[in-house]
Length: 194
Image 1 (tube, one colour):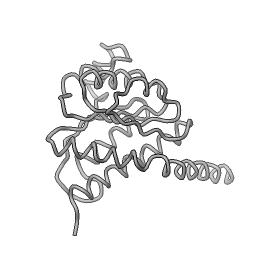
Image 2 (cartoon, helix red, strand yellow):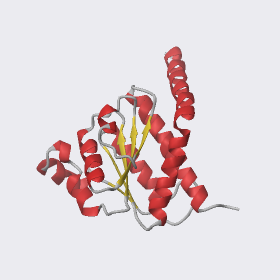
Image 3 (cartoon, one colour):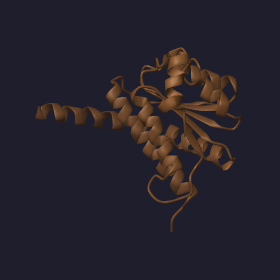
Image 4 (spheres, helix red, strand yellow):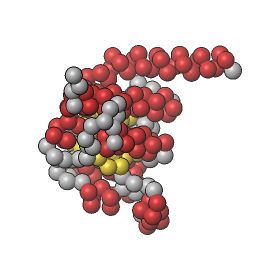
């Protein structure tokens, strides 16, 4: 079992090393997109399904509350699957249209969608991305190596941050790294500390 733990660490570290050379520029660009959205008075909308839903919640928590230090809240919302809202959506909508009502009700020009799709086959997320593209709302898509469906939906002004991995667990943990880096960069740029 000890060797398996070491193998998991090794696999994760190798993906991080590969991602650092492949994705640093995209993370910097994503940070600029988020800051432009927020500074122009708009909001970040996040979505994900299954375990990526938790990553979307984590991003919004960091923006709305704080990341590393106290600062003003940044406008952001997670497309919701909880409580009565989630229950009614799951009951009334086909699963691939899960977020459409919420997105259509809150998305405005100038907003930014950050979509989590580690496997690239999450139909509810794919359809939300397509909806955003149709509304000319910029998208940042966090994906994994199997991302052909996402690439076919994104517009030219959109950005994909594709983790160089196919194992969902490694993709999800790297998405968390991207969230942390993005939030740290936003906070340190918008709220520099002496």
